Length: 356
Image 1: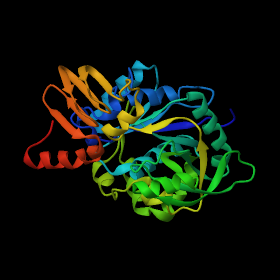
Image 2: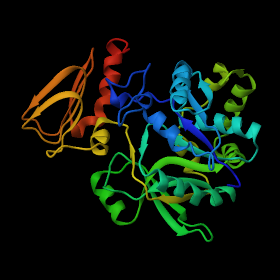
Image 3: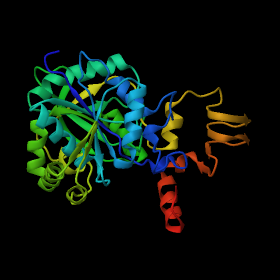
């Protein structure tokens, strides 16, 4: 391939909706929640084709750097790791990583991927990346849109516009829509809206220019934090004071929803954001009664349940659409349609005492 793509993998989230399994010192992306290896490792394997990709740049919390390096080595991937001294959301993470890549290889095409997602159909995913490369090379910020499998209320949506001439499967973007209610989600699905995967393909110089237009404060703090950074082996330790001055915003809110350079490529691969226990239930194989069992458990006369049992044996009887999570020190039982509220529960628990 003429222009190999530099993957930027975002691995700094906490994942409090997946408590009590996801913790600050071992968040969801570094755990095998949907297979034999972590979703971070699955993402590394997804971008391992040396014919398409260069070595990835990882952005993660400074306390997780060694873990990110160790897990990358376990799947035989050489990586560079940017250590965030504070959580400032995805806009600052992408800005710093883009500046790092631009410094070493100006005008590179980069692929921004979250590491808490599951992407099946590796070949179809690669086809989608290749389809978007020419548009990215021409100066477009290409977001990956997915044809909805169902009307999900916990995903954001994209309304695609006209097809862009000369670029297969790439269209303009008419609108970005935040997470809808059930009625709107069904309407969006019928009208051909796409799920917004939150994954992107663009040139580093283009995204830096767009940051300058729409989020100059984030760009400035990112530049300043890098100017005072330290390089230690694979690790880039950026300056805490400068980085903390950055506003805490997602890339979508800070830049993508304002830019005139955005386009969407339609992906036809299976994808899931594992942001909560109900999305894990949706993503994983089920028994004849719609139950998902992770770990050691006995399920009797129950349907539509998720049981994650670690360290103890869990048994359930006569339950429907219930999530039961057991760890050595915590037990969570929640109605499946209330799984999004686990974050609020964690916030309340933190008010009483620190959660390890």
